[in-house]
Image 1 (cartoon, helix red, strand yellow):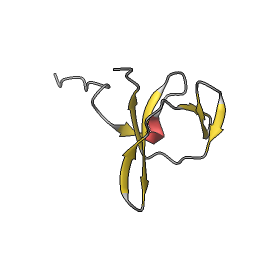
Image 2 (tube, rainbow, N blue to C red):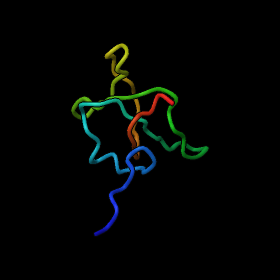
Image 3 (cartoon, rainbow, N blue to C red):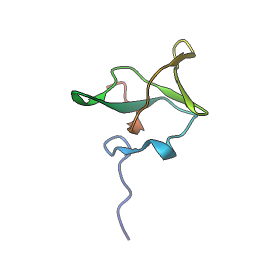
Image 4 (spheres, one colour):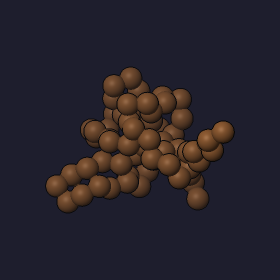
Length: 69
């Protein structure tokens, strides 16, 4: 039986990101790949800051579970 990936460490494609929890997301820009320093939450096809519930203009490429530590 194959081991289950540890979602705290494994980056997953944004196409399968859940909408019911805080996520750490990465974006790619002209300088490279960057993990955002705050949690994000998927809201349909948009992304929001869960602390304000306001839309943020990002296009993440991959995600993993947000960890406060």
